[in-house]
Length: 125
Image (cartoon, rainbow, N blue to C red; front, side):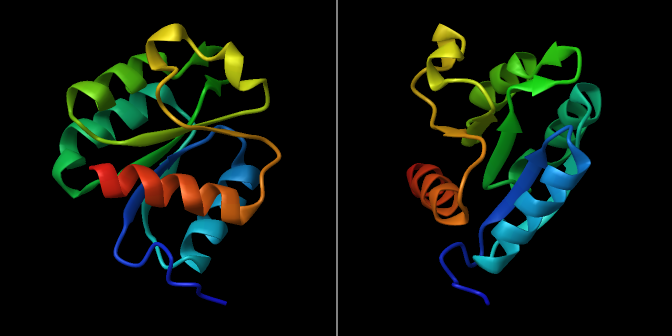
């Protein structure tokens, strides 16, 4: 079922849990988004963003990527004016103060919450 809510929106997914990444991709595609790719590694994500920044409308960004945080990528996204939505299994107040103005979708989440947040950030982009 394609809701069309995110039709035309190109999204990159940064999530280190493979099964959750697949679920997020499915959620996004059900809303009509084009998923540009996924990774669970900070360095890979930073390279992808640097090489594709003009084609990215939004990024789904897991706060914790195995043994490191995704804050260096968040800094890169801010500098490149690419909107993003954090995902985390922790409380939203655990987000670094520098990024508290960015939306946080707490896990587990429902598709409609994720769609609404991605739609909101891409509209501001």
